[in-house]
Length: 454
Ligand code: GDP
Ligand code: GDP
Image: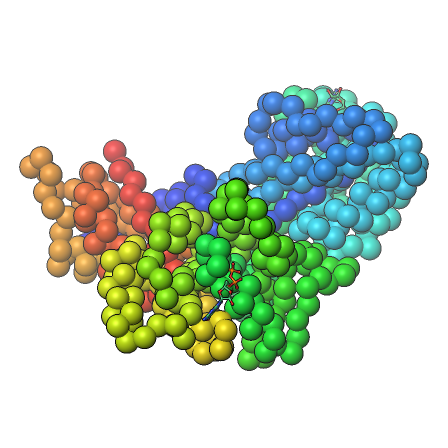
């Protein structure tokens, strides 16, 4: 019994688990040659060169994934240099504005050997107005002598200057700690209830009725916005109000933009599905229930499973389904959708609107499961009982013991079991199933990882 409470390592979050959902973003700004790229490479823990700035050439912003102390974040290297066009200072100021609007925190890089120029003053002025947290890195502090140069930059009014050397790595741990402190644990609009509309991907193979459903939903909504100017809302999304609640349907531009070439159509469809899933929290997977479930439907479902997003299945074209077909649909669903038996299934007709009102409550339910965190104490007392009643099967004469469990992350709920030996797949599935049933994770995938402790 004591095994379930005695070991408090808590290190499960420290080794790069996917924490679900988009990571918060850090934008890097500064004049050319202050060492932004060098520092970005440090932040992302890689040596290879990030795209070099080519004077006079406008490039897109480059983003990189970073992981520090078990937390994921995205580093966005603000590019788009064209100093000839509008003057360096204007360009850098515009860059700072952009960084402020599109990221969760801004990292300003200054060259210690040069100090604050007019351009830094201009950047500071923009950033001091911003609500975004700002981290000030003073780069090229290769040795102690240069520390004084760094301290001089308190004058920018951006808080404590952090002395670093992108080249040698000096101070990069402190800088990363400061970055983590500045970043929200989840991006603002991702906070869920009250934190902005939740994101929905409308997916399914061509002709299942995605556009029809979107039309139906937007037709009945009193508030539909396709692009919200001046905010970070991506113009390819639609904001739709359903029963007084706002939802963000992502990548609906891709839905409206019909791809008509027969060739490559499936390729584009699956690309859109992928993109939509990446930016969504919950997916409505449409299936045409008037015809048998196809391989392409299965591929869409597989993509949802891989994405780890919450899921609601909409069996569309219910108006074309008669009593005989109804029985067939039930068989097909049991057989072909067994992998996602945890998702709610809703019969709808996008054309007549029948059943469509049941989608929002199902999404809400699925997202509740997707967001849920089980306290470690409760999880382990549950696990203790489960294992006492049904111990893991003996393998090679040895009984593996499950020492401890923790929920490493949510969105989707991801659990880690620490054991003294290998757990058979069947037993892992048993634990996963019981977790799902006992804690009612309806509509969300649940992941269970096993760590064998030597
Ligand atoms: P960016 O234009 O701001 O992205 O700057 P880069 O990362 O391309 O760096 C510009 C120059 O500064 C390169 O020659 C780097 O090698 C050099 N540099 C970058 N970081 C440091 C540093 O910490 N110390 C020194 N001495 N040089 C650095
Ligand atoms: P998408 O390719 O998934 O966006 O599918 P569409 O919305 O374009 O629909 C494909 C076809 O199915 C169109 O001819 C629609 O009118 C039809 N359709 C969509 N939903 C329904 C439905 O609920 N009932 C019926 N009978 N037809 C539907």
